Length: 157
Image (cartoon, rainbow, N blue to C red; front, side, top):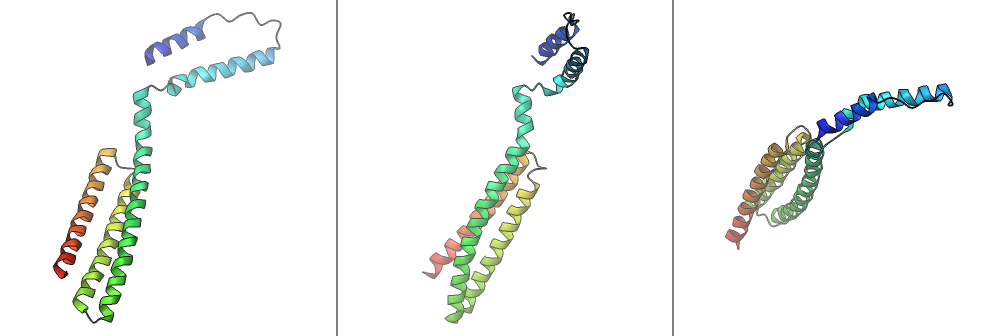
């Protein structure tokens, strides 16, 4: 398809130009120059569907990574708030072991946010599949941590 469009454009450019004796020669010259420049850039400006999708992939990955990081950071901040509250209550009640576990949970959420930030920062350079793999690994880590916290909560009940 692209080859056909290029051939047609070149045929039109090679066609004889109509008489322009009655027109201002400077205007005719400017129009011809503009047409020549347009013809020179035309092959690079014509985009077919698959090329357009490929060129947009990096932007879509970066946008998805930003949304992902936003979600992970909000979840981590909420988790940290709950864990810090529990840690403070446990310290006030002199439950040092549980307070230490809560402190480790706060640190783990910091690590998860850092990993999510690394994925978001590198997403522009990564291909969609690689970014998806990294995001899946972080999701697995979050799920393991959530299971650990659920297990701890059910054991203490």
